[in-house]
Length: 143
Image 1 (cartoon, rainbow, N blue to C red):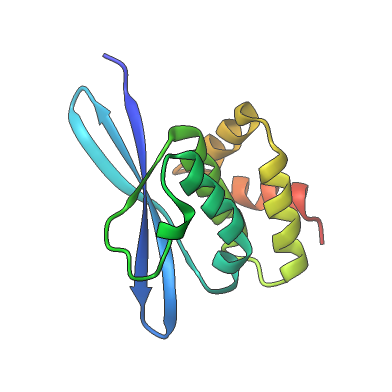
Image 2: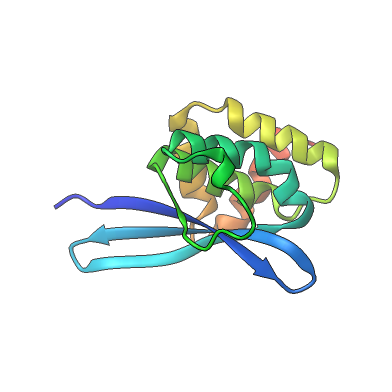
């Protein structure tokens, strides 16, 4: 039995911020469905990523106009777009400088799918994920 991966993008309301997003990955395998949070983002990192989020929503069969802060149902993202959104939010979340965020957003948008999958697997690793995220940020947006 092959595993299928499903990505769910939730719009969340937080304390002190207007809204944010939460990306979850659901894996339906032999032992049944498992779901975990990949990343949460809000504020400037979310603002820098919103164009790519809207593209992911659109390419996954939803209308971009549905991306509103009052939405309660999650967006189901197609796997390649879920991988890109996860990678993007993991990479921009800790950044402060808008120019570095722009470089990261542009770099991930330009990646072929295979490269995005490679970096996503590295950046979500339990043991070396943070180091991979830092390496990706350095590669795409050196200081």
